[in-house]
Length: 290
Image (cartoon, rainbow, N blue to C red; front, side, top):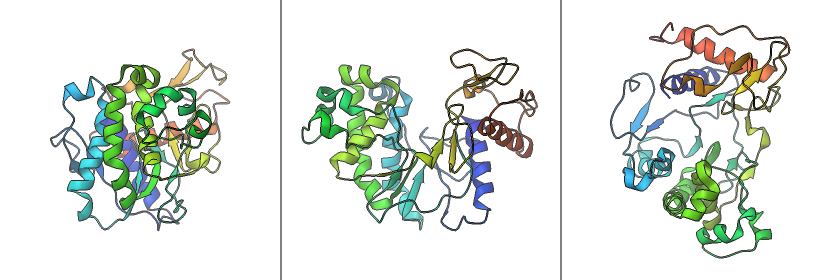
């Protein structure tokens, strides 16, 4: 994650310097390792404690809700900002983001197609304060905590319950099996529902190449999926392409400073992703040559 968060902060600073960025405040990386790391001097960082292994059961993402809750209790009041955007290392800002909230108590969020609590109503009702029908579950926001734009006050209402519900899901065998790697996203969604907080949903909040192809009016680029293309630039879903960019190739190591040329017809958004990473790689200090 070191290279990803460095690129993320590099690109955030670039967008912060753009015209129209007056709504953007400061930047804080919340590091839930319990100790400082080598990026503390490069990226503004607050350190919080991780959950113990018997609580995470090997799912490190489960520390995220606890980290946000700790940060709100320990660090938040030292900053002037009263509104936050929660983002992740594999999010790259494309342009300044205006205030997308609809008033103090209507946060903004990106809808995820795979958050579908109505498909498992019996499991879902285990984690709601009041049981509802599968039809009513369609009103639960299909979101995670990121990207989300929210007030400090509302996040303080959600965070402790988000932590508790996510832990409960992980330790419920049926729910853990049903929701797997996105279970803490369900935890956030349920915690918000239980608190009576509903988000305004913006499909253009975040692009996800290779499925999204043009920059269009997107605010954030999320590179969670592998981008695979053949020699002609034709997308090859489910098959490793002759040309590919996949963040998983760089787990534990840095991307190179130069990348193989794009085949023709590779979409604009994938090109933008690689261009941002290559620009940061060549601008940031101490980036390995290989």
